[in-house]
Amino acid sequence: MSSTCLPFLAEYAKNGRASCTACKQKIAQDLLRIAKVVQSPFHEDFITTNWFHVICFFTRVKPKSIEEIKNFDALRLDDQQKIREQIDNAGELLRDIREFDSAMSSFKIPNKEDKKTIKTKLPKDARPSPKKFKIELNTNEDDKLMKKQDKELFDLKDHLTILSKSQLISLLNANDQTVPEENSRIIENLADLMCFGVPSPCDKCNGNLKYKSGVGYKCTGDLDEWTKCENVNIDPPKKKFKVPSHMKKDNIFLTTYKPKIKKRIFKQTFSTKSLASVQKEEGDVDGPEVKETLALKGMQFVINRKSKTDRNKIMLLGGTVSSRLHKSFL
Image (cartoon, rainbow, N blue to C red):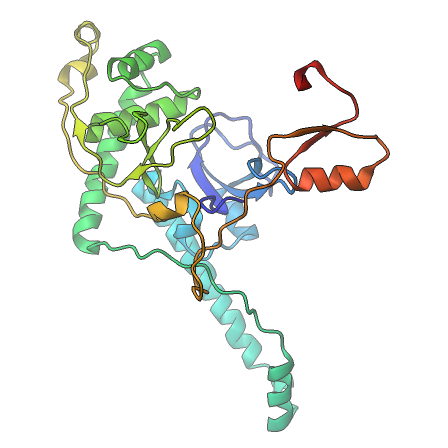
């Protein structure tokens, strides 16, 4: 899993097709759902999401904090609070179990010397905990601003869901923005642009900057034919969102909308450096864990069908294997 991939993901269901991993029932469209993100052992960029109802999720999984949940700050504040309470309750339950365990009479049977011996023999987790990036927020003031910001964003989303897909695309095109495939992503992007302003193009590749939860405004462009741009800006320069005049005629929402420019407040989960390849400094045992790029990623191999050992080695290094030569290989 990449250094910026969190173990959990929260969002509102895009459709009603996914089933809950725990109870096996369908998760209704627009209902809050949480996934456990699992990476393929063979492909670095391929992950699967095991979806849960919120209630079912916390019977199976216990996140340590909200910083482990991707897209958390894009949820409605009421839903954020519900998740916080579930995590806090899980922590209290764990503390109760530990207190009960330490009070067990069976542990009093060994004498003091035996207890010391037992404790020294117990395995200790020597792995350093990943560095947590400091989140500097003036809680009282910023909480008020985030509540106001949250209301504005979801009001915009509610209005945008009424528009047709062609209208949504026209709004993006009018502001020189790339168009995502999924309708939900289009609405997310438009809500951000209309609420905070249109970010200026990336100063490294001239690509679009799009808001990414917990990160900031991340570039979606390319530095060259082979390299994706990883530029991130917390508060980029912006211009006012434009609504084409012909679209205002038959739509009250677009007619009354007033464009503005302001800073988006969010809790930064990742530092901007963690999005690019970062080498661990000597002696920095608490630094973030950076995964090495797979050596055979993007390469294709044709090998003997019986050679299972070679096949597994190639796949573990990111390569793809076939027993026949295809035209696409040439």
